[in-house]
Amino acid sequence: MTTSPSKRLSPARLPDHFGSEFQDMTAGDLEGLTLRQVLGLVLSSLGESERRAFLLRSPGDKGNGAYDRSVSVGSIPVEMRVPRSRTGEFRPSLLPAKYQRGFSEDMESLLLGLLLSSRSISSAKTALRHLGLPVSEKELEAVSAQLVEEMELRNSRPIEPDMLAIFVDGKYVEIRDSDRIRPATIYVVVGLGRDGKKRVLSCISKPGRENLEDWKKILRGLTERGLRRIMVVVQDDFSGLLSLNKGLFPTSDVQLCIVHMQRNAKTHLPKDDAAEFQNKIRTIKTLWDIEVANKQFDELCDRFAKVAPAFIAEIRKKRDHYLVFLKYPDGIRRSLSTTNTVEAVNGQLEKIRLNSGGYFQSEAVLKLKLAATLSTLEQTRWAHPSASIAQALHQLNVMFQIRFEDEEA
Image (cartoon, rainbow, N blue to C red):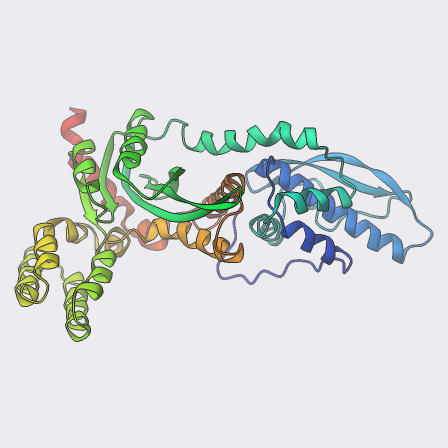
């Protein structure tokens, strides 16, 4: 599913009477439904609503049941019910053009927007029944395992052995569990393939706060699924994670997120000193020569060593890992210096969390949100290499070949 960031999307206006039904649906989550199933239900309900509006304008015509049709929403195959009229003059405007299976970019954007705005299980079931769809409690329970299976497939399928980079980060969330709210962490690993495309290699929710044992299982799981050679691992400075990645990927560079380091400086340094620290770091990030950058980083540490001794001692010890990105082509340095690639996932989840009242209504809801978010990213923003990556891609692949040519011999 591809959209152009330069285009302004303007989905077709929905019938007025669909508004109340949609509000009911978005008041709930969709427990027990796969992403594919929910898309089919939403498409079918939109068609039913449009036919009701058509029949109000055409008193001489009547409804004439519906037929099944397969369509594609991006790369997702979907089964839907297409309503008909007796005269045959009605055709839902949301359908793809005749002889086509895929939807327009506008409609795909609308559909995923509907999915990402859902909240409560009971109200969603009620809304689906009010729309006249043949969905029973038993059917909902029967497909609940499919949703889990889809997410597990992403986290278990074999992956490419070679990656230019992987980006590693965790996001803290809260999930409603019966009458209490419990903490959870979403562990995300995004890979940058040798074709320049970004893809989610792993996205797993675990109860509790971020911890090293969970990271060990997830990262070792990547190697068991086939990951072998990575040019650079980009991560934050979570305790123990640096040593873990150096051990798992000994021939890889490990870049510590320089933005996280800049944020930490604000908490360890007085306001004026923190501003000076930020300015000097910005200068260092623009340097071409890594040796000059190392020297200026050391001078920066000397400048603030007495102001924040523990913080400065820690970043001085890890200087080489903060400046790894300077070894790479200029156009790609910004991307490799931070974990912002993972923030594309985390940022979307944060918006959904806020719209859901500050927490996710259930584990099933969280999995639906993750599925929709990842599908949207990989089929829109990440469908093609970014301009900066495309420009540096040949050089990056040459560097990869040189780095690992001894292993191939």
